[in-house]
Length: 210
Image (cartoon, rainbow, N blue to C red):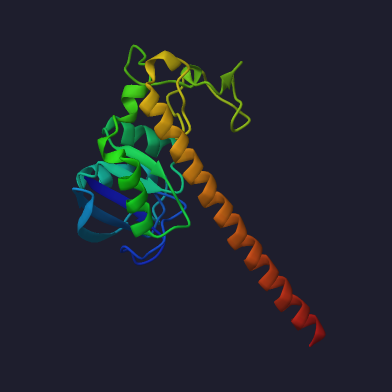
């Protein structure tokens, strides 16, 4: 399994997973065989500072590196669509080290999981649309509280098909575990922000006294 992780700094197993995909400064390509890390390669993200289309170009880079899974904190709609078309799975994680993200992937068996496309009902064009998602209601995405085109294909990573019958027990169990892990990472990120705010407030009080 070849996993491309968007990284926050210089890349590598000890770097932190980037909260964004296309604008991450580096990518860390990890080769996993038999549940073990067999290779690590850091790739500079040449499109991080580019203008429009960074999501598509970063996705094309992932495909060019023959990545099977991409890890980042969040994926834009165009990046998500491009990666899905390339048959590349996406995994949301941030605030943890690359090594921890890989361990989570191996522990959750994502390498053996079916591609996301197999969980999604197909349109005539073979691409999922907003209206096929459980969060779509009367022209609006109830998850993000925004209006969307029901026929639009710029779905986000939270896309969940309405046709639950097509989703097996293993898939549902996998999704639940992924969401629990994401919840834990968000909670840790909030704690980190709280600590940083307190530190800055303390520095501000010291500055006023001076």
